[in-house]
Image 1 (tube, rainbow, N blue to C red):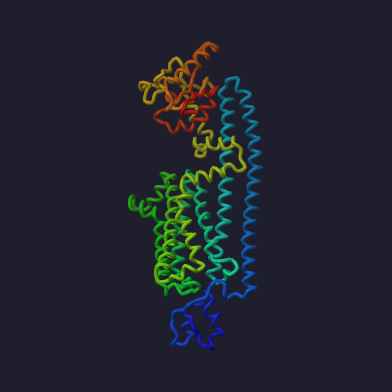
Image 2: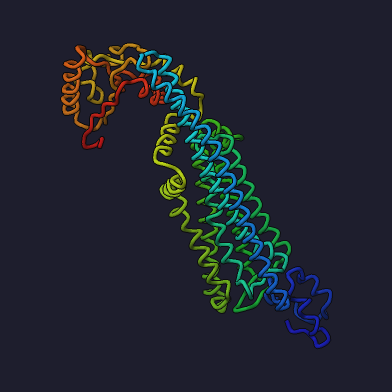
Length: 494
């Protein structure tokens, strides 16, 4: 914008600060001047050099202080949790030792006491692992989002020192891992937390869509050419970019509502989360990938359309390359936000500060559903459904998939926990004849030593086929109720 000489001294105040819009300039400039206003860098050029340096130092110091504060809070929470769990482990160890010492009397009460102590240890290990992983993810996410979003806020109020710290696209890149980490704090069994996560991503989508609408309404400065800024309303490509991005965020964040609402009517999302929390969590992860891919496509296409179209000089703009990098990283979200990548991240985080025994206990606790019901409830179910079979009533075709003559479960009989000689573990895909021969050799040696055939817990005959899920939840108790574990190894089960 070429200003008359009397107004030349006022040009930094009129055209540099982001709060100065075209309407303000119209009221101050002579009517014969053109109305297309070209801004200088609205983030920092109005700042004096000492002020820009001080602001850059203040931002870096503030973000570093926030990082240290979050790290300190996480360390305090971790140490508090460790002290509390140490006292619990000592108490459970005493109960388990005393229960195991008295279990030789073959009294069911002693076996139950010992099993309760071991189940409690597994529950504690699981909770400790989950809390530590969730706290660590939450801490990293809070740090990344502050480093990523504070530059956007400063830029919006015209206080971002871009000459010192560069364009805001580079710190904004941290939004991608920050938002991607958020769903990792949710577990498939946390129905309420998953519902909150669904609502949170709705809020995120609406918030960023509102940001694009507000950007258009306020006619914010946007970069064009090699080093100029104009109002967004005066540039069709930038206007289309904000419209497309706002609509994409709305569609991506409400994709579950659109699909499930069309299939199941109003309230379909809430009913789906209540009936199948895992499916609800899968929708949350899918929405994250969908939003990132839509944003990435917009950020990749916009610079290309601009350079190949009306503004070839935009290729030299300092914003062009960062936009392409952020767009590529966002568009590649399936590579780092897919199931395999999430599993690898959670596995790595789970190994931090834990032992192999604690991780194994947590896995057993999770697979067997200990987090969804109390130890007492599991013990009652296990005591009522614990069934064993004598080896002389077992047949070779019981280890063939679909074999057993249909009466396999009828040949088993109820027994008290502790009244079983061996828990038989095997893989159905291994050769049935080879497994039967190995079991026969073991049973023959057992009978020669004890004078009777062994009693066994075998899945096909001991699990209630009408309530398989409930029986599987009691597997650790069934295993604890057997004198030994007998593994029939093979090529599959190694």
